[in-house]
Image (cartoon, rainbow, N blue to C red; front, side, top):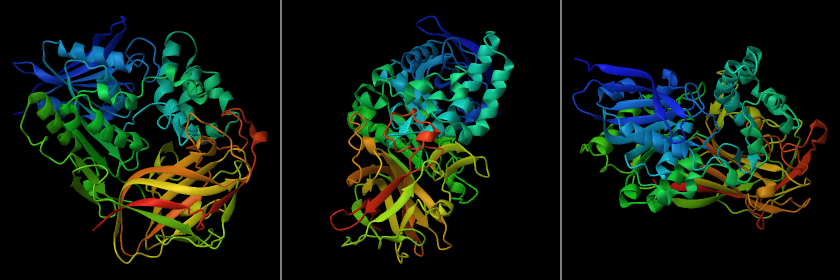
Length: 580
C-alpha cells in the first residue's frame, strides 16, 4: 500500500529582510514530524523535470522525508531581485531555519541539488544554520568568479556564459519585466530565440557591447564578470571558508563536468579543513563518467548501463545518505570507503580510500617530433627528449579552432548538446593543431588522478592562449577527449599578477587539465593535442594584449606559436599512473 503524499504549493518562506520566497512542499501524511530536505533553485520549483535531476520528491516523501523545493530570491514565484550567488548564504540560513520550525518537520534538515543548487548548499553551510545536518552538492565548484562561472585558465568562458544566461537566467527576468510593464513580449521572444544563437552571439565584437545584453538588462552581472571587478564585490568563495563548515557532505561530480576541479577541491580540503571532526570525516566523493547534468551516454560513446545515474541508483544513494544523517539509521554510510569513482575504459565503478589515490605513480610523458607535429603528428612517451626541432603553427582568431566536446556546456552539434567524449579528429585535421601520439599500447595503462602539463612555448603576440588536451585513441582511429586545460599567457604567474609576454621569448606554461580516470586498453594509444582556441566555449584571444572585451573585428591579429620539446625545454604531461 503506497503512502499518501501531501503537496502544498506556493508556501511562503520569509527572509530576514522581509522578502518573501515561495516553495512547494512534498511530505508524507504522517503521525509525527519527519526530517526535511531543502532544495533551493533559481530554475523554478514547478519544473519537475529539473527537480528530478537533483532528487525525486515523490520517492523521497515515500521514504519518510519532507522535500521543500524553493524558488530563490528574485526567481519565478519568489519576490526580490536576483543576482547570482550574492544572497544565497543568508537566504539559505533563513530558509533552513524556517523549515526546521514547521510543525511537520522534526528539526533535522538536509539539502540537495545540482549546479547552482549545489552552490546554494555550500554557501548556506558557511553560515552554520543550527538545524542543517548534511548536504549533497552535485556538480558544483569551489568559487563563483575565477575558473568556475566566468573563466578557465584566465580565458573568458563566453559561450558557456551566454548559453547559461539565455537559456536559464534571462527568460524569467524578461517575463518579470513584461509583467512590470517595462518592456513587451518581443523582448522575451528575442531572448528565447537567442538560445540557439550562442555561436553567433559569441562572435560579436567587441564583447563588451553585445547588443542582446546591452539593450535588455536581463543579466547585468555578465559585464561585471567581464570587467573582472574586485572579488570583494563577488559572493564569498566556498574555498575561503572550509573551516567554517560543520556538516558532512556527499559530493558528486563527473569527469566531463566543467566544475570538476572545484568539486575535487571541495572534497579534499573539507577532509583537511572542515570545522569539526564529524565534518572532516563525513565527506564522501562520487565521480561518474558524467557531464554537468549527470548524463553519461553520447551519440559516439556509451559507457554502459551502470554508468548512468539510473544504473547507479543515484536517488537511492542520496536517500541512504539522508537516512543516516537525518534519521540516524545505521545503514553503513559511515563505514563505506569515502571515494567511489567510475573508471572509464574498464567502464566499472571502484571504491577508494582517498583522492588522489595513495598508490599513484606520477610519471612524466614527453612530447616528441621532428618539427612537424601535424597530420600524422609527433610522438608521446616517457622517454626524455634530446635535440628535437620545435613545432610551429599559426593561430588566427578570425578562424578559431572549434569546441568539440569535453568538460564544457554548450548547445550545438547533431544532438543539440556539445559536451562529453567526442571524437577530436575533425579538429586534429586543422593546421593550427599539433598532435602527439604514443605507440600502440601492448598492456593496459590506467591514468587516474590530477593531470598537469608543462608547455614550453613562444609567440609573436603580446598575449595569447595555449590549450592542451589528453585523448584516448581507439583502434579505429577515433580520438576521444578525456581532459583539457588552457592558459591565457598574461595570467601565467597567477590571476593577481597579469603581465604581457615578450615577443619570441620562451615561457614555461603550467597548465591544469584537472583530472580523469581512464584505462588505456591494449591496442589504444595516448594522444596530446596542442592548440590556441576552443571556440565558442572560450573567447577568441585577439592576441593584442588589450583588456578583455575591447577588441573589435578589425583588431584581431594572427600569431605564430612555437612549441619546444628538447632536452632544455622538455614539454610534458604528468600522468597519474595507477600500478596494475
